[in-house]
Image (spheres, rainbow, N blue to C red):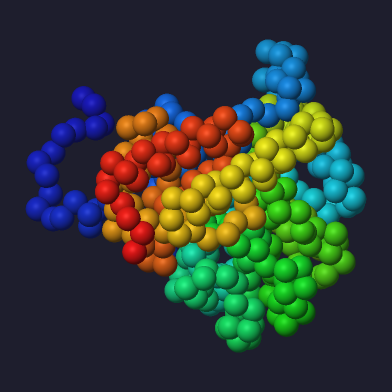
Length: 373
């Protein structure tokens, strides 16, 4: 006789007998990126729209079957990454993209009774990881109508309970930046807090606090190799900061969190600065073309220093995204954010992709009958 037998259902609600997650998990927001059906010109997710360095592709062809059977070694590549950025190896930890970096920082530094402070609109994964560790502790400083960073209001929101502060520069989804002096002022005003500066889009702007991260005791910087370097599918990012803080992050990190393929090609991506400079220049020129094109079409937008431009379409935002998809171009509708109602984001590609995107945008606006104001 089997030890497992089928019995009649118990006369109780099934939810009362199934395993339940922590209350914080039940309450935390969920991130549902619209990834299905992306066989088109992908101007929706701020990815590199072209390719990683040719040297990365060459390196991929040298990876042997035997290499796939071993656990990846992060340490030797962290030495290379640290040296590339003028840091010591104990000041850098590689992560499974910036998503994991955010998660590790929250796990390492947030207790349930702590508060974390962010500026909105911003990257939704901040909300997810913060609420997981400090339920009800997320504090937001909302942008004004220009979506610019407001330093006085942000400084005023810091309290003795603020344990983590996250500021992105350039910011997603606005493309706005925060001056280095303001970021250092935040770190100085909150010595009891970890100040994380998210520089995922640094390459398209150029100003950084990374050199300060090894000297300011509460400042850490996150970077991704998904955007300018084109390694989004391999999931690799980094955290840089004082060795003391990085040491805590190592304690909560898996030793094999970054896959071996990413570790194998990352040194090649870093070394090919000529290719990186070419791609970044393509994006910067394309960004100006898109903003000029939006001016010509009369579409309001927010000036950007990232690889995307956020435009204000208003009530016809869904219709525009659908019309663009019919023309083989994907845009990101950001109207799920309360602060971004009616806003649509367009990633900047290389020259021919910008031309295609602007042509499709002009046609789509005409199709849906959009008019400014």
